[in-house]
Length: 144
Image 1 (cartoon, one colour):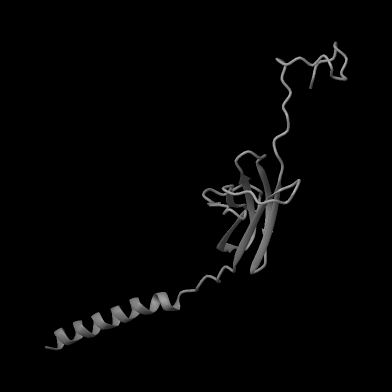
Image 2: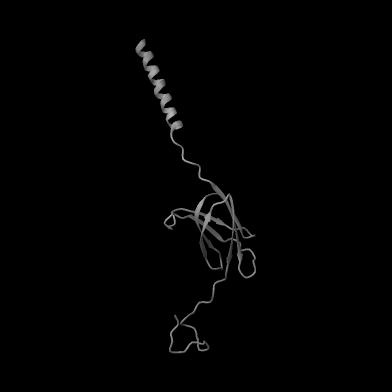
């Protein structure tokens, strides 16, 4: 009878200890989070660009982009937002249809951040297959 009672007491003590260990463990400090609002517009007239992909990647201290990330799409007003972005460096890339791709590192350090991204149309590319006789370059000089 005493043996059975001792086993019960021992079992209760072990269970209580197992429940207390996580409570006594050192908790990690809470990482502050931010709400980031994006506005994607045309550089020449400030009109919004819809359906642009906005990609967020955390950046390590050494400047390398971490794996994973978050992809958002802009609405008809050129806006996208995300709640819960951790403080620190974030690489923001914007991939819009019909515009130049843009990318930049931003330091997120406030509860609410608004980022405006101005985009340009692609510039005309130089082609060796086109006639450039009217260009101002001498004929013996090759384009760079």
